[in-house]
Structures are given as structure tokens and as C-alpha cells.
Amino acid sequence: MIGWPELLIILVVALLLFGSKKLANVGSDLGAAIKGFKKSVREGEDEAKKEDADNAKKEIGNDSDKKTN
Image 1 (cartoon, one colour):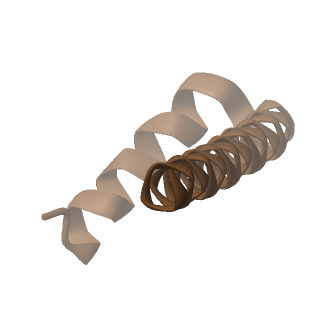
Image 2 (tube, one colour):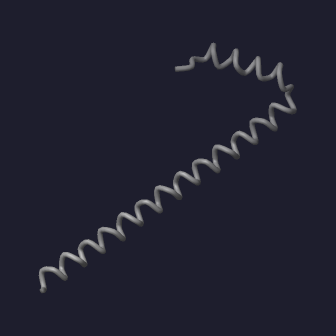
Image 3 (cartoon, helix red, strand yellow):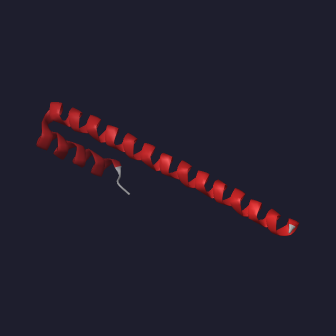
């Protein structure tokens, strides 16, 4: 796990490499990328849950058809 001293060193190195203005843009872009990634993961999970529910409904329908015959 990264502690405060390591995080501070990483921040200083990033500031030296990119400069303050560029670092703000990099941070903003990184935040947008993370937000988009989380949204995609959430949508994928929702779709998987919907497919599972649909499959369960189909199985229940098939089971009740077998019992009535």
C-alpha cells in the first residue's frame, strides 16, 4: 500500500515532469477516464444481471410447461 511519503514523492516527480498547468490537465483527463471506466463496468454489471434474470424467467417457464404436460 502506498503511504503518504510515497504519495508525496510521486506528486513531486509528476509536478517536475509535467509542470503545474499540464498536471492539472492530466489529472482532469485521468478523472474523466476513471469515471468512464466505472460507468462501463456498471453498465456491464447491469446487463449481466438483466440477462441472468431473463434466463431465470425462461427456465421457470420451461419448468412449468414440463409440469403441466
